Image (cartoon, rainbow, N blue to C red; front, top):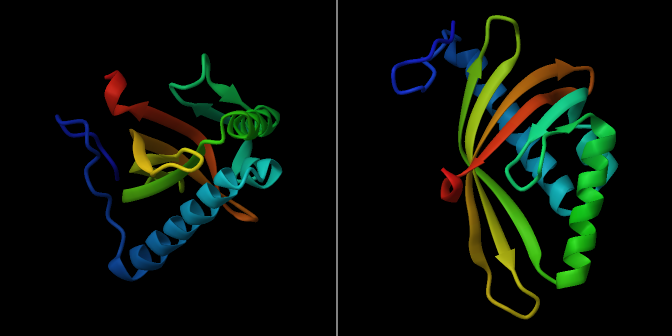
Length: 155
């Protein structure tokens, strides 16, 4: 069972270590693949890692994106922005916390760093974020049904 503590951090749910280790590795692999699809502008492949009715809520957009068509459009806008500026963004997910929920979903919380490399310039940390997802199991593996991203500089 997963419950919130006074600090807002979820208390550990009971899952045997023999089951949790492989699950944790699956989730890490999921995020590695998902972020590489995103940074490579593989819009349809990235959108397929979300449920058909997913909600993608990030502070860089005026409102949450709903559904795969909106996710594809977002990736295409990102590609156009990169082509216009020459700036390259890379996303790095770390400090991943995975909490199985009683309904079979996973609640994850991770730090998401966005690194920016200007054309011909030095890379730098551009944004520091917290990413909270609800993952559901699908025939193809895990999918995000809801993603909330918050930025440290906007709190």
